[in-house]
Length: 343
View 1 (spheres, rainbow, N blue to C red):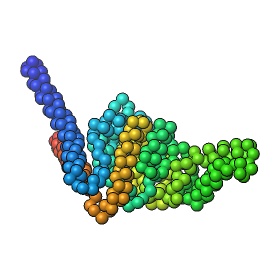
View 2 (view 1 turned 120 degrees about the vertical axis):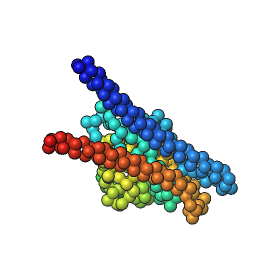
View 3 (view 1 turned 180 degrees about the horizontal axis):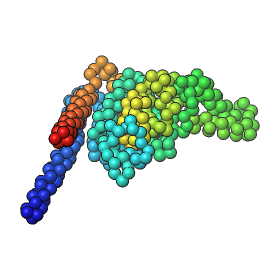
């Protein structure tokens, strides 16, 4: 009898773990198929837009596209240590590996595309974009990106009131321009070497703060932020002035503070370069459409935005179904346990 009981136990034990393995394999297949479906949709739509553009006489620059492979290679999916995280980023976290949060790129891709569409629309309407990143590894990347698309940047230090107190900031910029003109005409003005040296030091200090916004002439129509917790003062000022904010939100950020959050790594230089390249291409696309008189035409990227939204809705529906199945199974188990307890 003991041998029979042991064999029965072993039989049911193997069946149970076999079912667990099948469920795990199905889950992995669903994740893989969802990511593959999203990438294939982006590729097909991108190629279709390319064919349409080639047939047009007046070729217009298309919205930049990206792939899941590019995001993976740039390390966009790496978050912060588990002890440094914001609970509001939970919906965008895929899991934990070696005490590091892993960001769900299935959520990042549609949100990144949505931010590119918004940037293109703002640039097409003639809006100004301000890039903000004061951390060491992103300074030069952001400066180069802003200069490539003819926009503005703050990469050294964010002064309090740089947007909300623009009147005072503009006075400091006028003073900076006047000192630069005085240094250039030092001989005509009869300035001594000591006076020129003091003014040069002051100019270098002010240029480090206002160098990227000297020609902005007013508040911008959009702001791009690389590290939300570090640039919280800039984010708050933009929110007070109702300026749309596009921000890279790592796992320690608050996505509710910005209008267009993009879950992703904000520390890696390679990831920052990828974000900036995509943002620059989107801005240039909008500027080209505005200069080409395409304001009245339908924006070509709407199809890709719709596809991304549809795919995002499908993912949410599938997740809701899985959750409902899980809750139903739990309720059934609890009912059975309650019945056994009553007996």
